Image (cartoon, helix red, strand yellow):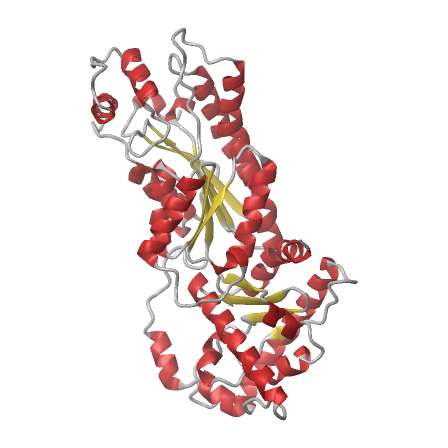
Length: 473
C-alpha cells in the first residue's frame, strides 16, 4: 500500500541520517490513534511543546521532529527534502537547548539527532540503539500522545519548562547509571540478513551474531526453517521490554522471512520487510546453496545444472545488488560474506556443476568487492564439506558420496551411522585431521563481518582443516 511504499523508500535513508554518531534501529508505528495524531492540524504545535513525563526523556528526548507533508499531494522526494531540513534544524535547536540550559558540571551533550519522527499519513518512526530500545521509545511517545489528547480535551496541554526538562534529562545520577552500562557489543545497532538461515551454517550464524546484539533477518525458502531459528533466538534473547511497533515492526531481535533467493521479486519483498522491521539492512551473509546429487549414470541433467548456477551464483548476486542500493542510499558502511566452497578451488570428479558454480561464486565475490567499494566490503568463506546440521546431505547424497570414495557401508545403517562414516573420511583427509563444523565457518564469517576485518575485501578464506590442493596460489 501507499504507506509501505513511503516507508520502504524513506526509512533506510532516514536511518542513515540519524546514525552518523551511532548506529540506530527503527520501529514504525501506524495504529489508528497514532495516525490520527500525526495527521492532525495540531500535531506540529503539540509536538513542539515537548513531552511531559520525565522518565521518558532519555528515550524520546524533550520533543520529537514533526514534518509537514501531504501524503495525498506530495512525493517521497519532497518528504526527504522536508526531513533533511527538519533534521538539520532539530540538531541546531537541540545544541542551543543544551548550551542555554547546561550547568558548569552538566554531563556532555548526548547525540542531538531526534529519536522520534512524526510524518502525517505515515505514522511515527522511533529510533534506539537496539530493537528493544526503539520499541520502548515508540511506546513512550505513544503514551505521550494520549497525555496530550487528554489534556487538550480538558483545557489545553502544557509541557515542562525547558530548564526543568534539561535538569531531568541530564540528571547526574542518571548519567552515572548510563556510564556503568556495558560497552556496546561488536554488532550492536547493525541489521544482518542471513540467507539460508533455516539450517546448517546459516542457522549457526544467525544464533551466534545475535549474541553480540545484531538484529537478524532470518531468510530461508523453507518457511518452517526460517520461523524455527527466529523463534529459537527470541526464546533465548527475549523480545525486549517495548511493546510498540505495527505490522512486522513489532518484532524482536529476529525476523523470519520466506523467499527463494533466486527470485528477485521475493528477495526484494524480504528486504522491504526488513526495512519495515528495523529501518534497513547493514550486512548480508549468504549461506544458501545447492549440491546436485547425480543419478545412477552420474548425470544431473541440463535443468538441474542451470538451477545449481542459479542458487549458487545468481542468488548471491541478486541479494548483493539489493543490499548494495540500500547501503549506498543510507550512506553507511556494510559488509557481505558469501559461503562458497573449496570445490571452487579444487576440481573433483562427479560434481562439475557444483564445482564450477562455486568457482564462479568465488569470482563473483571479487567482482562485487570492486563494484560495491568503498561502502561495502565483500568476502567469502570457502568451507570443506560441512555435514553437521546441513540440509544438503540427505541420505541419497551421503550414500552416493560413500560409493564415490569406496567407503564400506551397509544399506541397513541409520542416517546417523552413514553420516558419521562419511564425516570420518572427510576429517582424515585434512592436514589437521578434524571434521569441519558449522561453528568453524561462523567464526570466520564473524571476523569478516566485524570491525577487525575493516581493511579486508575481495578475499576468499578457506576453512577446510587444511587441504593442500585448495591452498590459494
